[in-house]
Image (cartoon, rainbow, N blue to C red):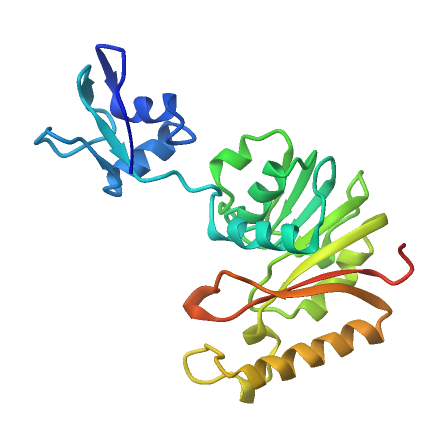
Length: 252
């Protein structure tokens, strides 16, 4: 936990956290307090977002998460592993959800991110308030009209649907040198017989079969696979996931 002293005589606890960079905004700070992630050593009171903190109060808080969701932790490994540069890029985040991928792209220097999701009200409020983010809700990427800016980098994290359904539409949106990073989730590319009860595929042989089948689908459609790596962050329920760096074969 990180600690600090504050010079003001009195201040709201949530605002104090924001002022010292321990939360993105007051709403996030309040959530940290309510989640029990903030401590006031020597103060018998239970911390609340609006409580006034004395000048001598020492505040301890768990480190602020780097991204708004675990998705950002996944994608940053892929960007580094594939040596993909997002700085200055116009990006497309397919299956944006809370916005972990979007957040990662922004922190990597993306100039604009189109955050697309079939759901509604999921994107983190900090990202909604960022002028570089264009949120497109209740929209399947296969129905997405071409943005005014061709896409330099698309990142894809979809669930309960196959990548084979969405990838053709995504490739059509790319700029001349556009590229794609896809998160392959074996449980959503598998046949019914390949998914055990509980939905978690642990058998490496089954992973290999699913990955091989998907790679064949990729190659058969004249899509170039530039690189492949296993995600260092497990998916929901402990499923192993994999990243692929792809682009139309005609590029480069």
